[in-house]
Image 1 (cartoon, rainbow, N blue to C red):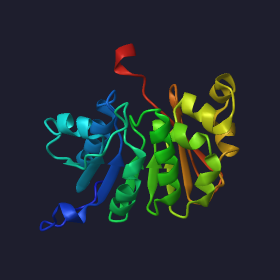
Image 2 (image 1 turned 180 degrees about the horizontal axis):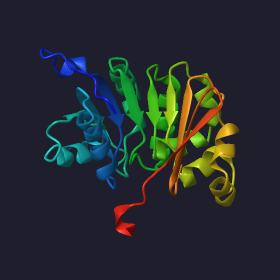
Image 3 (image 1 turned 135 degrees about the horizontal axis):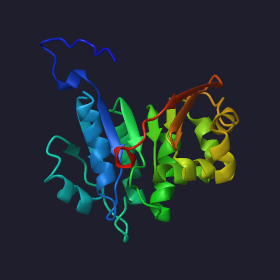
Image 4 (image 1 turned 135 degrees about the vertical axis):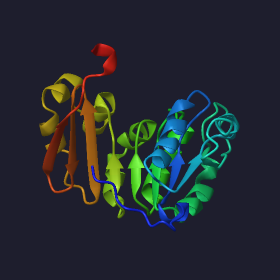
Length: 215
Protein backbone atom coordinates (compact mmCIF):
# COMPACT_ATOMS: atom_id res chain seq x y z
CA UNK A 1 0.00 0.00 0.00
CA UNK A 2 1.40 3.36 -0.99
CA UNK A 3 1.27 5.80 1.90
CA UNK A 4 0.14 9.33 1.24
CA UNK A 5 2.71 12.06 1.61
CA UNK A 6 2.26 14.45 4.51
CA UNK A 7 3.08 18.11 4.54
CA UNK A 8 6.11 18.79 6.70
CA UNK A 9 4.15 21.50 8.52
CA UNK A 10 1.08 19.32 9.12
CA UNK A 11 -0.32 18.78 12.61
CA UNK A 12 -2.74 16.28 14.14
CA UNK A 13 -5.72 18.49 13.37
CA UNK A 14 -5.10 17.81 9.68
CA UNK A 15 -5.60 14.06 9.96
CA UNK A 16 -9.12 13.59 11.14
CA UNK A 17 -11.03 13.29 14.37
CA UNK A 18 -13.02 10.20 15.31
CA UNK A 19 -15.35 9.60 18.24
CA UNK A 20 -15.43 6.07 19.67
CA UNK A 21 -18.53 5.20 21.71
CA UNK A 22 -17.41 2.02 23.37
CA UNK A 23 -16.66 0.09 26.51
CA UNK A 24 -18.32 -1.11 29.69
CA UNK A 25 -17.17 -2.23 33.13
CA UNK A 26 -16.51 -5.75 31.81
CA UNK A 27 -14.87 -4.67 28.54
CA UNK A 28 -11.63 -2.70 28.63
CA UNK A 29 -9.68 -4.02 25.66
CA UNK A 30 -12.24 -3.33 22.93
CA UNK A 31 -12.56 0.43 23.53
CA UNK A 32 -8.84 0.86 24.13
CA UNK A 33 -7.59 -0.97 21.04
CA UNK A 34 -10.29 0.55 18.83
CA UNK A 35 -9.39 4.10 19.79
CA UNK A 36 -5.66 3.44 19.66
CA UNK A 37 -5.81 1.78 16.23
CA UNK A 38 -7.01 5.00 14.62
CA UNK A 39 -3.96 6.83 15.94
CA UNK A 40 -1.60 4.04 14.88
CA UNK A 41 -3.08 4.21 11.38
CA UNK A 42 -2.13 7.88 11.20
CA UNK A 43 -5.29 9.55 12.51
CA UNK A 44 -5.22 12.87 14.31
CA UNK A 45 -7.58 12.91 17.29
CA UNK A 46 -9.10 9.79 18.83
CA UNK A 47 -11.84 10.61 21.34
CA UNK A 48 -13.15 7.77 23.49
CA UNK A 49 -16.57 8.07 25.11
CA UNK A 50 -16.56 5.26 27.67
CA UNK A 51 -18.10 4.82 31.14
CA UNK A 52 -16.38 6.96 33.74
CA UNK A 53 -15.07 3.94 35.66
CA UNK A 54 -13.50 2.53 32.50
CA UNK A 55 -12.08 5.88 31.37
CA UNK A 56 -10.11 6.45 34.56
CA UNK A 57 -8.35 3.10 34.22
CA UNK A 58 -7.68 3.29 30.49
CA UNK A 59 -6.32 6.82 30.81
CA UNK A 60 -3.33 5.38 32.64
CA UNK A 61 -2.51 3.23 29.60
CA UNK A 62 -3.71 5.27 26.63
CA UNK A 63 -2.23 8.71 27.17
CA UNK A 64 -2.57 9.50 23.44
CA UNK A 65 -6.36 9.13 23.57
CA UNK A 66 -8.71 11.99 24.47
CA UNK A 67 -11.20 10.61 27.01
CA UNK A 68 -14.82 11.74 27.31
CA UNK A 69 -16.11 9.95 30.44
CA UNK A 70 -19.80 9.00 30.36
CA UNK A 71 -22.40 8.49 33.08
CA UNK A 72 -23.03 4.81 33.75
CA UNK A 73 -25.91 2.42 34.18
CA UNK A 74 -26.08 0.28 37.30
CA UNK A 75 -24.24 -2.45 35.40
CA UNK A 76 -21.39 -0.17 34.36
CA UNK A 77 -22.32 0.55 30.73
CA UNK A 78 -22.97 3.90 29.04
CA UNK A 79 -26.29 5.34 30.21
CA UNK A 80 -29.05 6.57 27.90
CA UNK A 81 -28.95 10.01 29.52
CA UNK A 82 -25.67 10.68 27.71
CA UNK A 83 -27.40 10.74 24.31
CA UNK A 84 -27.71 14.50 23.78
CA UNK A 85 -24.12 15.11 24.82
CA UNK A 86 -22.88 12.38 22.50
CA UNK A 87 -24.89 13.74 19.57
CA UNK A 88 -23.46 17.21 20.16
CA UNK A 89 -19.93 15.82 20.21
CA UNK A 90 -20.55 13.65 17.14
CA UNK A 91 -21.46 16.73 15.09
CA UNK A 92 -17.88 17.98 15.51
CA UNK A 93 -16.29 14.73 14.35
CA UNK A 94 -15.28 13.45 10.93
CA UNK A 95 -16.58 10.00 11.80
CA UNK A 96 -18.05 7.98 14.67
CA UNK A 97 -17.33 4.37 15.68
CA UNK A 98 -19.89 2.76 17.97
CA UNK A 99 -20.16 -0.63 19.59
CA UNK A 100 -16.85 -2.23 20.66
CA UNK A 101 -17.39 -3.64 24.16
CA UNK A 102 -20.56 -1.57 24.57
CA UNK A 103 -22.40 -4.36 26.48
CA UNK A 104 -25.81 -5.94 26.00
CA UNK A 105 -27.46 -3.95 28.80
CA UNK A 106 -30.85 -2.99 27.37
CA UNK A 107 -30.56 0.71 28.28
CA UNK A 108 -27.26 0.92 26.42
CA UNK A 109 -28.64 -1.09 23.52
CA UNK A 110 -31.46 1.45 23.22
CA UNK A 111 -28.90 4.26 23.31
CA UNK A 112 -27.05 2.61 20.42
CA UNK A 113 -30.21 2.37 18.33
CA UNK A 114 -31.16 6.00 18.94
CA UNK A 115 -27.63 7.20 18.17
CA UNK A 116 -27.48 5.13 14.99
CA UNK A 117 -30.62 6.84 13.79
CA UNK A 118 -29.66 10.39 14.78
CA UNK A 119 -25.91 10.67 14.19
CA UNK A 120 -25.49 12.54 10.90
CA UNK A 121 -21.83 11.66 10.30
CA UNK A 122 -20.27 8.53 8.77
CA UNK A 123 -20.82 5.76 11.32
CA UNK A 124 -19.06 2.44 11.76
CA UNK A 125 -21.05 0.01 13.90
CA UNK A 126 -19.25 -2.94 15.44
CA UNK A 127 -19.73 -5.58 18.12
CA UNK A 128 -22.54 -4.94 20.58
CA UNK A 129 -23.68 -2.02 18.44
CA UNK A 130 -24.55 -4.52 15.70
CA UNK A 131 -26.55 -6.58 18.18
CA UNK A 132 -28.48 -3.43 19.10
CA UNK A 133 -29.44 -2.46 15.55
CA UNK A 134 -30.21 -6.05 14.57
CA UNK A 135 -33.44 -5.65 16.55
CA UNK A 136 -34.45 -2.84 14.18
CA UNK A 137 -32.26 -3.14 11.08
CA UNK A 138 -34.67 -0.92 9.14
CA UNK A 139 -33.27 2.13 10.94
CA UNK A 140 -30.11 1.83 8.83
CA UNK A 141 -32.21 2.59 5.76
CA UNK A 142 -33.21 5.90 7.34
CA UNK A 143 -29.64 7.11 7.70
CA UNK A 144 -28.38 9.62 5.14
CA UNK A 145 -24.69 9.44 6.01
CA UNK A 146 -22.40 6.51 5.23
CA UNK A 147 -22.84 3.43 7.44
CA UNK A 148 -20.32 0.61 7.83
CA UNK A 149 -21.18 -2.68 9.55
CA UNK A 150 -18.46 -5.17 10.59
CA UNK A 151 -20.25 -8.34 11.77
CA UNK A 152 -18.63 -11.63 12.69
CA UNK A 153 -20.53 -14.84 11.99
CA UNK A 154 -22.77 -14.69 15.07
CA UNK A 155 -23.63 -11.04 14.52
CA UNK A 156 -24.36 -11.73 10.85
CA UNK A 157 -27.01 -14.26 11.88
CA UNK A 158 -28.74 -11.56 13.90
CA UNK A 159 -28.70 -9.13 10.99
CA UNK A 160 -29.89 -11.59 8.37
CA UNK A 161 -31.93 -14.16 10.27
CA UNK A 162 -29.93 -16.88 8.48
CA UNK A 163 -28.51 -19.92 10.28
CA UNK A 164 -24.77 -20.10 11.02
CA UNK A 165 -24.34 -23.17 8.79
CA UNK A 166 -26.05 -21.44 5.90
CA UNK A 167 -23.93 -18.32 6.29
CA UNK A 168 -20.71 -20.29 6.57
CA UNK A 169 -21.36 -22.15 3.33
CA UNK A 170 -22.05 -19.10 1.23
CA UNK A 171 -20.81 -15.76 2.51
CA UNK A 172 -21.24 -14.14 -0.89
CA UNK A 173 -24.93 -15.04 -1.16
CA UNK A 174 -25.59 -13.72 2.33
CA UNK A 175 -24.06 -10.39 1.36
CA UNK A 176 -25.94 -10.19 -1.92
CA UNK A 177 -29.25 -10.41 -0.08
CA UNK A 178 -28.31 -7.74 2.44
CA UNK A 179 -26.74 -4.94 0.43
CA UNK A 180 -28.36 -2.35 -1.73
CA UNK A 181 -29.16 -0.02 1.14
CA UNK A 182 -28.00 3.47 0.22
CA UNK A 183 -24.75 4.50 1.93
CA UNK A 184 -24.18 1.04 3.46
CA UNK A 185 -20.91 -0.90 3.41
CA UNK A 186 -20.93 -4.37 4.96
CA UNK A 187 -17.74 -6.23 5.98
CA UNK A 188 -18.18 -9.89 6.91
CA UNK A 189 -15.22 -11.95 8.14
CA UNK A 190 -15.47 -15.61 9.10
CA UNK A 191 -12.82 -18.29 9.04
CA UNK A 192 -10.14 -17.67 6.44
CA UNK A 193 -12.23 -15.46 4.17
CA UNK A 194 -13.38 -11.86 4.43
CA UNK A 195 -16.02 -10.44 2.13
CA UNK A 196 -17.26 -6.93 1.81
CA UNK A 197 -20.07 -5.36 -0.12
CA UNK A 198 -20.66 -1.75 -1.04
CA UNK A 199 -24.23 -0.67 -1.74
CA UNK A 200 -24.03 -1.40 -5.49
CA UNK A 201 -24.33 -5.21 -5.03
CA UNK A 202 -20.72 -5.87 -6.03
CA UNK A 203 -19.13 -8.42 -3.70
CA UNK A 204 -15.39 -8.41 -3.03
CA UNK A 205 -13.53 -11.23 -1.32
CA UNK A 206 -10.13 -11.44 0.31
CA UNK A 207 -8.33 -14.44 1.76
CA UNK A 208 -6.99 -13.87 5.25
CA UNK A 209 -3.86 -15.49 6.64
CA UNK A 210 -4.08 -18.35 9.08
CA UNK A 211 -3.38 -17.16 12.62
CA UNK A 212 0.19 -17.55 13.82
CA UNK A 213 -0.99 -19.76 16.68
CA UNK A 214 -2.04 -22.39 14.13
CA UNK A 215 1.18 -22.36 12.09
